[in-house]
Image (cartoon, rainbow, N blue to C red):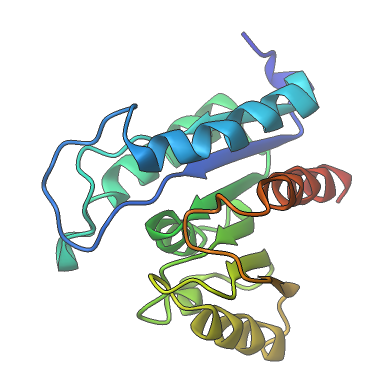
Length: 197
């Protein structure tokens, strides 16, 4: 058990999903498995200084206005904030998890967003409250979500005064199976910067 006084950052890791599905999520799903290396590597790199938690949703889909993942993501944020009061919270999300991250970042307790190939179809970046540091990575060969849309969101945030950075991954696909070390190092660097601030 991590002592509260030693924790300098909380990190919530947010797996992806799909547009519409009521299939129950599983810890063995590809979207969950894809994010475990991020969760584990952050825990290993920072030990007790960072409280890291991978969020699990009830179903795979966003499901329109139901925003199915959000109650579970909000619950994880509330539980983390209660367990580590006053500690800055940072969110790392892939694909649909990047959309979840943007919605969570409407809360002032969230200080940073790392969006990995985010599904920002509906200008979700506009939900992020001022003062949040935003880093977005996107493979240039991604055909499931769109790097040009992510770049547009980052440009809009930067123009509004955010600390916002877009990192293109040359020839990178949506699943992040290419340039694996680059994706992983980016997450470690994101958390390291968060701790240093």
